[in-house]
Length: 238
Ligand SMILES: O=c1ccn([C@@H]2O[C@H](COP(=O)(O)O)[C@@H](O)[C@H]2O)c(=O)[nH]1
Image (cartoon, rainbow, N blue to C red; front, side, top):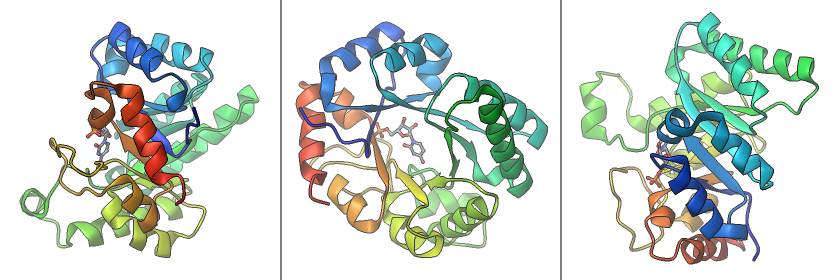
């Protein structure tokens, strides 16, 4: 079966056993997996090793945000894990992002390994305008996402995590090589769950996403391999 490295499947499971079973079931339909907080706190590096031994790519989604020195030090440890993509929160600010990028460059060079891509999370895709208003920003979500994406680019990051609804404006502002990794993706007819700013897989790529992140529509499907394969089929000509 043909997989597509632009599809990142989210392994949101409470145990290594459950996550490994999903990976085995999905087989060659998915090449790129995201390990987030739940699975990393439960299964740590065992899960990264498991995926790497099977030739999978790994996005370690721990969304770091702290003072620059703390984030930089933590990212040096993450870099040693040999993952392909890692992230921080853009609201940590430009100095934090610059320190993060420098730490990853330095550690990768020291180890002689390929540098993991570094992304900044903009505004979570679960957030709608009503919830966003509670935060008292002066911008709309779209304006704030764009401002954070430009800040991440200026800080030397490889890309952002945003909703596919914002991908078009980010692409225009940040150029063709900037990574736009978009959760908030639902195949037509799927439940939204707690996501708010959502498009279909095909629409995400039409808008300019470089990667999509899909979790529950695959992991909660009766046939996970078929659910992943249907997404690969939907995006194959885009
Ligand atoms: O803004 C964000 C940032 C990260 N996520 C993560 O992506 C997946 C989406 O899972 P679904 O089951 O497809 O909703 C999940 O791991 C989130 O932590 C996000 O959704 N939005």
